[in-house]
Amino acid sequence: MSEGRAEEEFLKRMQKAREYWERASFYLKNYENDRIKSEEKASEDLWGVVSCLMNAISVIELGKLQPRHGNQRKFALQFLISEFEDGKELFKIYRKAEKLHTDFHHAL
Image (tube, rainbow, N blue to C red):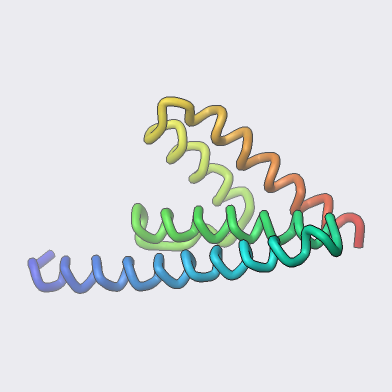
């Protein structure tokens, strides 16, 4: 890949990651508003934060999103364990957030 093409790809990835970072910020603001009104909705907002951040990282690392839960879970496990000393504990937190999301949808 030429240097110009590599730079273009990098900028494209960073723009897409920024979009997901901004979505995560949106969900965090929603969480702050919803936590008083509805625990269930607030839990869904938290999942939105986690999922968007993992997608932002995936775009940077792999150049693509992880839209399916199973794919995102696998990516989260591999990334967190490889990048952080306490990656296994961070993955447990990821799984708790994912469970909140699942519980929200099963309650509907």
